[in-house]
Length: 503
Image (cartoon, rainbow, N blue to C red; front, side, top):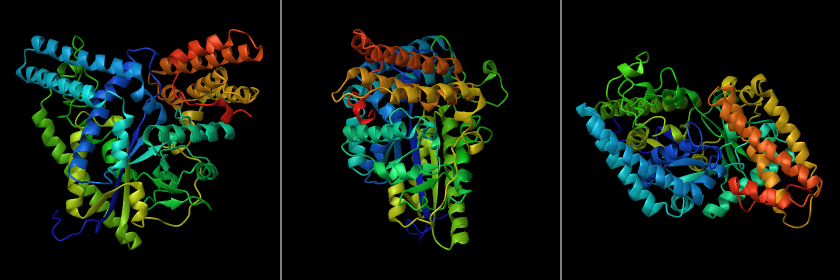
C-alpha cells in the first residue's frame, strides 16, 4: 500500500488513547496479587512506554498519543515506599535472570536469560538516573513538550454512575487538582473510569472543567467517526472504534495470541521468568516451545502492517460514508503493552511511525478537535466498556453486596458533621471511602480474577472507615491515633481535604 504523493491527513486521523491504571497496592500484600502487580507493570509497561515517547520526542514528533494516567496510579509512581520497593524488584529481576542463565540448557533459553539480564540492567540504570524523584517530573516533560495529551480522572477510579452526586463531584475535582499538582496543569480530558456514563454526567464534567471524555463505541451505536458534543453541553465524547480496536484486544483473534509471541501465562517457577512462546492455543505449558525474539519480530512487523492497513481501510470507508476525512480512535490499557503483551511496545512504535507515511494524521483527542473531527450533538445512554456495554460488571448480582455496602458507606460519610479546620481524621474517612469504592474490586469479582483479594480489599477499607467513623461519632480520644495508623498504610493524596466534601 503505497503512500507516494499523499499529504499527512489526506486519509483522515488516528488517535491512540492509552489508559494507565492500577488500584492502590502498596502495603496490601505482595504475591500473587498486590505490589508485585505494580512492579511488573512499572518495569514492563511504564518504563518502555516512557522510552518510546521520549524517542518520538527526540525525533521531533508531537501529538503522538493521548495518555491517561489515573491519580491513584500517579500517587503510586511518586510514592517513596513504592519507588524503593520497585528498585529492589528490578535488582531482583536481574538476579533471577542471572540464575536462569546457569540453569537453562537450551541455547535459545540461555540467550533469552542473557537478554533478560541486559534488559533488567538497563531498567535499573534508567530507574536510578531518571525516576529518582518519581514519575511526575518525567510526565510533566512529556506534557509540556506536546508529545502527549494527558487525561486525568477521579481520585481512586470509582465507577462514577454509582456514586452519590456529591461524592462523584468531589472525587473528580480532587482528582483533577491532584494531577495539576503533579504536572502543573489540570487535564482538559478524562478517561471516565470503565467508560462509565449516566445521562447528565456531562453537566458535572463541564462544572469541573472537563472538555472531553471517552465512551465505548456502542454508546454511539458504532458511529465513532468524530467527537460528539453531549446533549446541550459543550463537553465532547469520543467513542472507541471497536472494529479497529479489537484487532488487538480480542481474546479470540487478537494479535497477542500469535504463536510466536511470548506466553504471558507460562512461568519458569525457579526463576519467575517467562521462557516460552505461545506455540498454540491448546498446547499445555510443558509442551510450549522456547521463546525466540527473532520469530516474534517477524510477527510484530506482520501485525503492524495489518493494523495500519485496517486503519486506512476503515478511514476510506468513513470518507465514503460521510463525505469527509474521518477519525479512528483506538483505546487500550497501557499495561497491555509490555506487561500482558511482551512485544506490544515494538508493535506500537512500528504502527505510529508507519501511519503518517500512508497519509494518516497521528494525533491526540485535542488534535482531533482542532482538525475539525466534530459531529452533531448526541444523547448518550447509560453505558460502560464492560460486558454488555451496560453497568452489569459493576452493578450486577455477583457484586450486589459491594454495591449496597458502597451506597451505605457514602451516606454514612456524608452524615459526618463538618468542622471548619483541617481534620486528619475526616481526611482519612474520605480516603478510606474512596479506596473502598474503587471500581477494580467489583470488576475483579465479576470476572473472577483474584476475586478473594478484591473482596478483602473492599472489606479492609470499609472496616477501617467504620472503625474511624465510630470513634469520630463518640469523640473518642484515640481517633487521631487510629487515623494516623491508617494513613501509614493508605496515605495517598496528602492534599486531600475533607472540608471540600463535608458540609
